[in-house]
Image (cartoon, rainbow, N blue to C red; front, side, top):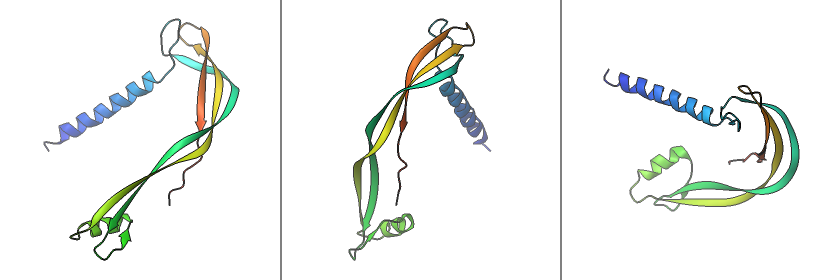
Length: 130
């Protein structure tokens, strides 16, 4: 039971980090510098076609008999063989996507000031792993 304080400390550390990251990701009011703002309106400015770079990592193991294996279960079994060599291939490719720009209006809950900002959202196509 010597590890129980470490587990409790680790869980508390994760909770504090998640709270701080959610707090500092909020928009800050330019007038009162508080992070207590609410999005009240969002209007689309423009759309832009962009290319996103994706990366695929392929791991192969060459056995003594020259065959290749790529499955996770077979990897450990083949790696244990004497003389088995593995190689990693990194394939980079570009996929088309869309970036949407918005003009967002915020209202501060502390000082009731309204202000605007520009944000964008990336729409990536879902990647299919096979």
